[in-house]
Image (cartoon, rainbow, N blue to C red; front, side):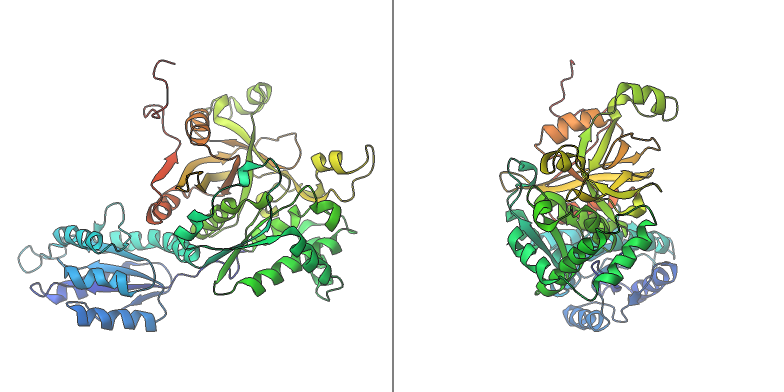
Length: 495
């Protein structure tokens, strides 16, 4: 259940009217939209904007009402200057839409908003103002009500990003360039960053020893996992760490409203803290606070955006290993005929995926790779414990990432698919993923454009919302898994 770390959108609607058209066209059409809208918490501004004075009154009114996102509705042609200045004076995302004809005659009932939207967009560009314009921004009351519903997750992400601080505990692990990206892109997006050392985290963790809240957290962990699915002797250490992160987030928000973490989790962490942090990370992301593994700053940002658009928890996974031909032949072919072998792969991480997105047999276990490296051969796992392991449950998914490349340019990818109901027979938090044309996407987007092996996963098809968010944020390169009939620029047509 996501908590207060995700914005709540309060949407307002302001109608505008050009003074040579009947103002009643805009007011009546605005009222019809309000009646058609089925979302929550919509504020109808009573001021219809015809001039700049009206514009100031309307913006003051919606601010007073607590709106943090706006719909600017052209009920007729609209006044170009006042309507675009709304985006300048209002501190929040503004969507611009226009009325279709058909609710009256074409004499006194014609509003020409179809024409007015052209000048509106031109004026926004002239003033270097950002306005969100839907794919087709002209419609009836019910059409525009649907545009508003689609705008809410986009607005939620934009509001969240502009008020986000990413807190890191690093530096990144040696020889781990997946998590090495310029922070310039964060500042361009308006994201704040606070960089700390792993030692700062350890000092704070030790200060939480004996915290009176620890028993309650241990009880909650036991309730979440169920008997036999956790190490009772480990819960106290993990609860102490969970409280450390939660307190750090609250005490270090500063001027920001929302936080995300990107933390180092190996190789020193388990030997000094006495456990692996994966399960705790999974619990925080369930509450709407991403904790990206391996100091992956853009992974944390991607996770946060995915939470905002989906309204649900997410995860961060390695695009990890191919599916064996034998597994494909025995468990996929014939059941999932839409997918070829190269459409499939396994997404894995040590154990940070929320328990609510995993199969029922998930459990807190130990990190096999770290156990090999950090503990004596043949010994019982101790400090390598703390991962949440099991197969990821079958679900629609969107695999995506927002990244700053080595030149400091923001770029992104989005690919929709699913987690298959196929047992992996492997370790960690892992699932068999299928994305149409994944093989080509892997080669001509992920490899060709230099993306790291981490990808964020939303547990729904939210590609259309992510695309709109990235576009609004000014990301020029938004890649996706192109169908066969649409070759990539680097794809060999003779191969």
